Image (cartoon, rainbow, N blue to C red):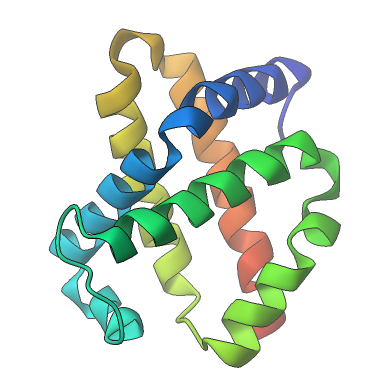
Length: 141
C-alpha cells in the first residue's frame, strides 16, 4: 500500500525524470534486453540497438506513461486501461516482462538519480512500479 509520503516521492521522481524520459527509458529497455534477451522478440520490427532512435522513442513513451499514471495513482486501473488492452490483445506481451522491466527501471533510476534515490525513494518506486506492472497484467487473467 502506498502512503501519502510514497505518493509524494513518486511524483517528485517522475517530475525529475520526465525531461530525460528518452534516455532513462532507453537505458532501462537496453538493460532489459541485455539481461533478459527473450524480451527482444517483441521488438523484432524495431532497431533496438543501444542509443537507437527506436529505443529512445519507445523508452520515452514508457517513462511518460509511468509519470502520467503517477499523477492519477489512485486510479491506476482507469488510467492504464488503454495500455492494458494494447499490451494484452494487440501486442500480446508476456505479462511477466512487465515485472522484469520494473526491476531494470529501478536500477536505471538508481544510476541517474544516484544519492537522491534513497532507500525510501527506492521502496516507494518499487511499490509503485509493482502496482503499475500488476495493473498492466490484469487483462491477462
